[in-house]
Length: 269
Image (cartoon, rainbow, N blue to C red; front, side, top):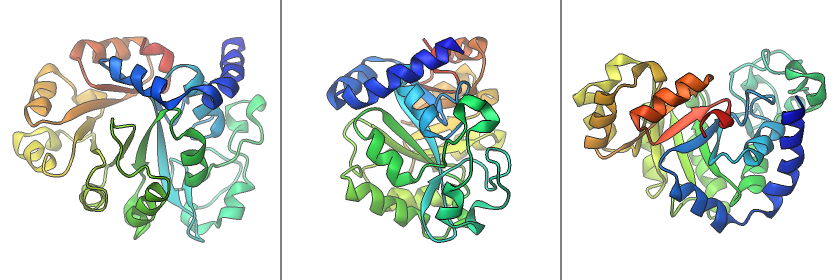
């Protein structure tokens, strides 16, 4: 716990002072990107500012965030399509307006020191971390939120984040149709497809993905040397999830993936 608190203190300094150029140069030099899954979610409540700040302090290259939409049309950061697991509330994200979502405690379930953590908005995360750390945006269940791709695009364009030069922003989803649309709306944005299905690792499937995707991001159970070679042959990169043990991190390093998506950024070093 002392380690986590120290990182939290460092985060308040690092995310404010670290120039974008230095952060990007550091990421570019690494062979394997360290992607903090929902932030440093092994140590702090997932998809909260506390977890994202901690990821910055721990030296992660990216934070991975899950984007959904409130009843009144605000993009918010939450993994589950209900608030039940990670807040003190109940109900579907899409059935609650932004004010109701912000009143929920999204931190106490992880520890009393995180009491009062709020569900962040997409705008808040973009404004806080732009230029400080890479952002891997996952559209969570976009089929529940018609038009969310256009709404995300508008937010990125407003901040001139729609044309990343060195992949400092990436968009991904399990919904392939959503990513096809995202590719059309954001032609210069790296696009990723997420999967845990063995059906999606065939030569035919990979050839279909490469028409609109730059990243093929499978669950760790699908990863082997053959898959990594096949993905690269199709001119895509590969990031895998979700690492929760040092052994899993070491396995993915040996597989020479392009990115490790982990709850524990310190396991990747």
